[in-house]
Image (cartoon, rainbow, N blue to C red; front, side, top):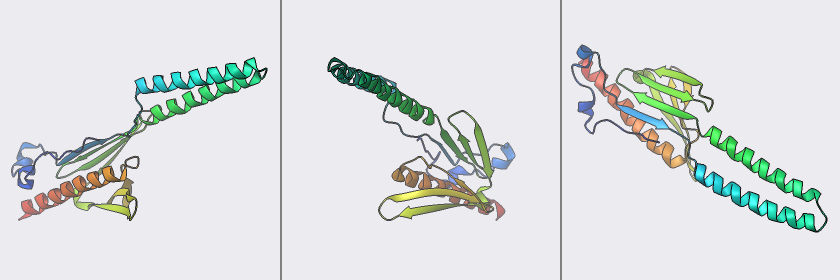
Amino acid sequence: MQPSISAEDPADLVPEDADATGLEPTLYEATLIPYRSLDERGFLIVMLVIAGVSFACGLAFMLMGAWPVMGLFGLDVLLMWIALRMNFHAARAREEITVTPSRLTVRKVSPNGFAVDTEMNPLWTRLQTEVHEEFGMQKLTLISRGTPTEIGGFLHASERKEIAAGLSTALAVAKRGIDRSLT
C-alpha cells in the first residue's frame, strides 16, 4: 500500500490555470496490494521443513510396517504446496486509485491480470464506510450516482482507515477546487 497526497496545502493542489494547460494535478494516488508475510525464500524454507518432517515420520511408519502411511505424508506436502501457491497467485491482485479535480479512477486488477476500470466524477462521489466497534473499519465503498464500488476489501481495518482519510481529503479538495472556480 502506497497512499500519498501530492501536496500539503489544498490551495496548491488545484492551480487556477489548470484548464488552460490541460493538465490536472493528482490529488491522491494509491496502489493497494494484499499483504503476504511469506516471500519466496520463506516459502522454500517452509516447504523444506514440512517435507523433511513428513519424510522422517513417513520413514518411521514404513520401518514399523505401515508403508501406506508414507504416501499420505507425501500427500500432505503436496496439498500444502498447492495451498501456498494459490495464496501467492491471489497476492498478484491490486487496486489503483487516482483522484484528480475532475476524475476519480479505480482500477482493479485480478490475479490473472484482467483489469476493470471504474471512472467517477469526484463531485458526484461519496465515501461510505462500515465500522464495527471491536474490529474497526470493515468496508470502504465509493458511491457515484447510486453505483457502489468497494475498495480495499483485502486490507486490514487500520489500512482501510488510512485510505479512507486520504480519499475523503482528496474528494473534499476536488469539491472545493470546483467551487472556487465557479465563483
